[in-house]
Length: 401
Ligand code: GLU
Image (tube, rainbow, N blue to C red):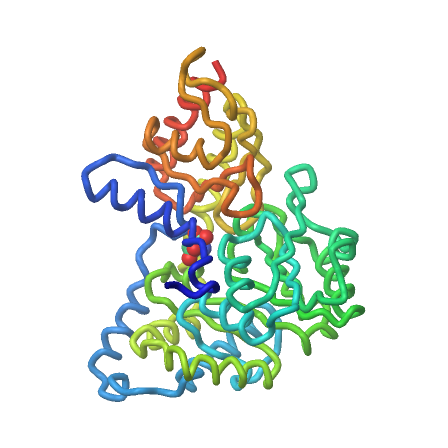
């Protein structure tokens, strides 16, 4: 009955875990959700007011250009130059229904049957599914905790074939929180240029780096890569706007033109009210994200300390985004409360056990090509974080005893 392409798709694990936690909470079950990465802050009032005004403007009640409101495309180009140093024309910007839609558009525009896309792993859960949906083959390139979850040119070169069309580059990384240095980015960018490989780089966490880490945009570090580079971004993480669904892709004019044709057939313009809100967001200052970053940094340190202290758990200190990605292998294969107790043999099973026994939701590493690990978002209130960590520590103690 179903097409092979869509029938074979897995549901988004991040959204599934989040939906499960939110549904349980709606039923009155007290669950601490470390699932979806979603700032717990409200969208700043000035952005909300811009949306309210847009609701009253008849121009916003009509179709607008598929690629985005002209003033928003121009503001995104200006914001990109301001924040990452990449100079682009407004015509190189396509406004999409959230960052995920930008990922889907980029893959659909660049990939087809016979192509391979290199995915540094652990990867965000939607990348491989969207590569497959485009008819191409995802090729994970894994680097574990001992490598700081960062791939190098040697890893990519070992995976490269005549069919390698593009590499997905993400820093700060979802799910690991790893941040590549400028030198590491320079090496990967130079390698892509040398082999004529496209780079799709997801910069959605550009403003969320901590401690000594700093964000660098690949086509800025390696300008020669820009003619074969697509940059993805959106307002969700920077302005606490996950539900508004506004993202964008920036790329060479012919790529953006083709992706705009695709979008004109599939979804038309992004909801104008959301675009008006995004316009207020990207034209304003970065004060709100500075406030959120300070809170996330505090929570990052707290979560890292809690996880590192748990028996059977090791955790690298995340440097960006808002996720910790501990190794949970020491909790697998161990009976809960001693002999005869319930056993989780995989992190997928451990996530179920944690939800049922400890009322804690996290996303198992299987969703990110990294069985044995788990993703815990620290974009939640301090008190919830403390309570969730207390519960998970108790569970770890019961498994490790
Ligand atoms: N970045 C969020 C996460 O990974 C988005 C959720 C999603 O769309 O999958 O949790």
